[in-house]
Length: 242
Image (cartoon, rainbow, N blue to C red; front, top):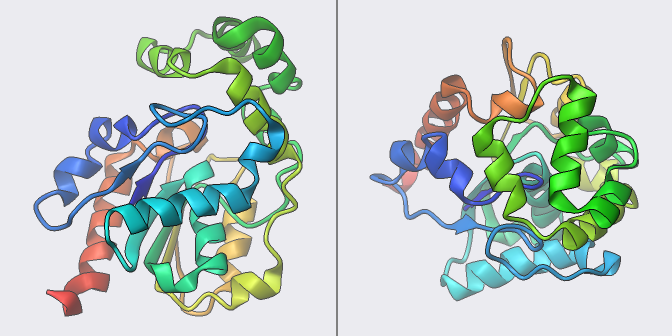
């Protein structure tokens, strides 16, 4: 099961080479999280609680008749995986978390984009959001990212951003209780997420942690090194199943 980050969709796993690297060995389940891609996009904040997100993932596994999946998630998808494994550990055979941790999420999305990002989504739509982000960064968003962002419902994403801001994170004791094989990776220049990712990895006995040199939050998931790391780690974890 591969689960994307904020404002993106299941297509990233094809674009960045994960599907090509994994499809000959595994049955792949590519998920659009609620509010993203082709999934339903409710516009109320309570629709985006992590309980709801975990329920979605369990429903997908049930529909696919999968008892337990090897889970790969990046950013929001990584947090979703951590929440899934702490709520329903029997459904996660192993866990890969990229650029994410278990800490409180207050201000996390604003730090990735810009202050007041939820208000801009609600008031100015996706075009306004992308334009504001480009202006704040000082350089334009690339055409592929812009196209991916514009496929989303801005009011639904505003609700998701506000729900994320209210997310208190996962209790340390719940994280310590994770027993599934776990890999964390993060870009060495991911200033927004590196500390939380490293700290969360340190809580799980036997987990592995890797930093990808020279990459930030936006680029680490697309790094060839990330694809190689994830595919190699999964091969080791699943070798006894084949």
